[in-house]
Length: 39
Image (cartoon, rainbow, N blue to C red; front, side, top):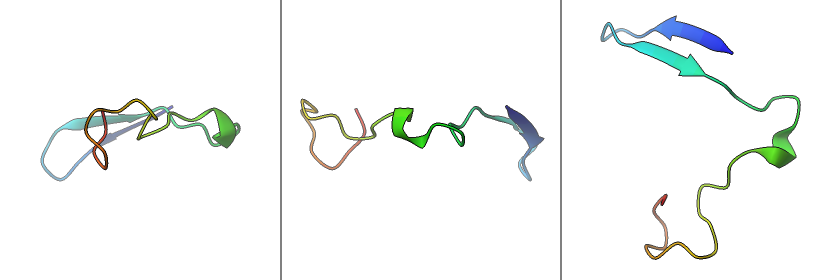
């Protein structure tokens, strides 16, 4: 996990899957009712 403050003063948290990229969230699931946009 990574914690960083951005230039806007907001706190950002990264929880990436660098060690297991195949298990990362799919941005556009097959049943997404709005193609091309995250659901």
